[in-house]
Structure formats: structure tokens, C-alpha cells
Image (cartoon, rainbow, N blue to C red):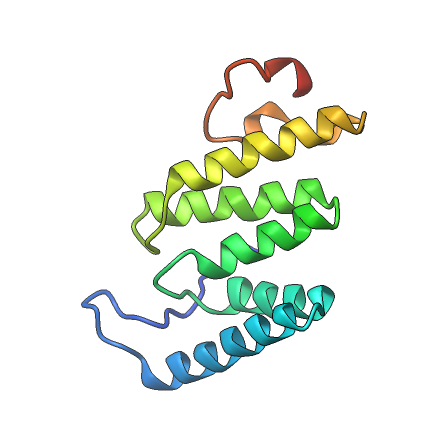
Length: 139
């Protein structure tokens, strides 16, 4: 994930950049439709486009992207999406539940442990919080 500034769909005063909003809305509708049709890879590509190129006012695209990545066992990428969402929520750039993403991170770490994945790719400093009882699976 890139750290470049993302043009916002909403301005700091709650106003809408109508062109950006229309683009975002069409993409999000397309992603939802693809997901309903079971075309998860294509939906993930659209959600990723939204995350990287738009800044909506909520965490929906982050949540869906993280869920699809988790479903594909792309755990590190799912963790990256969760952490980006947490950062944006903390900065009040998007609305959402930090606790929801923390819970998703816990669940992913449990899956990593259960599948016997090499947890060395998941570094403890990558996380925004300590997950009690799971410290042993992050090195």
C-alpha cells in the first residue's frame, strides 16, 4: 500500500466533491455486484482501487478488502489493510470501528497460527495494539 495523499471524496467540512463521489460510488457499486456474483478476485481489485485512489467517509471498502484477502489466505495483505483502516479512523479521516479491525486482526493471527504459517513475515511492530495471549505467534 502506498503512502501518497489520496484525494478525498468528502472535504473537511462534510461537503462532497461530486465528481470524486460519483466515481467512488460507481466503483463501490461495481465491487458489491462482483462480490454478490462470486467474482471475489475482481471485487478485491475494485476495493483495492478504492482504498488506494479514493478516501471515502467510511471503512466499508477496507472491511470488504480485508475480508476477501483473509478468505484467500493473504494474511499479511489483510493485516496491512486493517492497519491502514485503523490509522485513518484514528486520524478521523474515515468513520469506522477500530475495535472491528482489531478483532479481525486477532482472527487472522489465530488463522496464521492454526495453519502453521511462518509468522516471521508478521512483525509485532506492524500492529497498533498488543493482542493478549497471541504474543507468541508474532516475533
